[in-house]
Amino acid sequence: MKIESHRDLIVWQKSMDMVVNIYQLTSAFPNTEIYRLTSQITRAAASVPANIAEGHARGTTKNDFAHFLSIAKGSLMETETFLMLAVRLNYLTQEQANPTLCLIIEISKMLTSLRYRILNTP
Image 1 (spheres, rainbow, N blue to C red):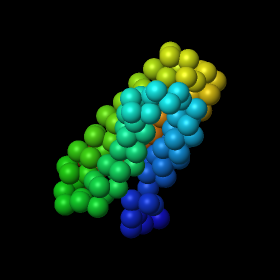
Image 2: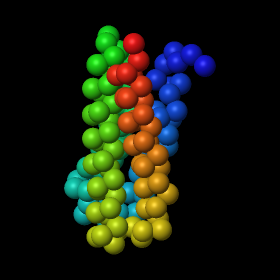
Image 3: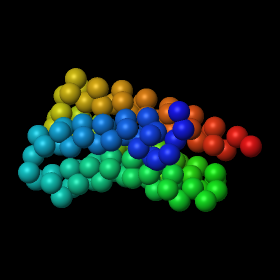
Image 4: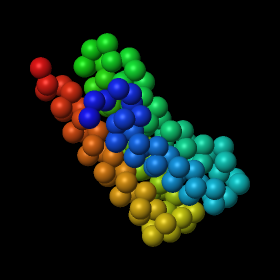
């Protein structure tokens, strides 16, 4: 299959699913967190597919795309950290967070693999 758009990338599709999960999970956070943890985690999560899309669109060099994938991975790890913090603060149970944490692990592996392939393909 030819990749014509960032929307064709499975890692982008799964990242979008993760963002939806994060929005659903944060809807149960206390109102006092709306400008704190809720804002930070939703921004970090949305940054993942946004950076994949921007890197693919710019794609003037393979290093450009790889750079944006690296930024996406950083945002993904921020999202994971904030999600784990929400569990520690008892805003979510571990069981509620686990499906999204598993998706984060999967996306992380995909970003690493894609970045490696981009940088090591002639």
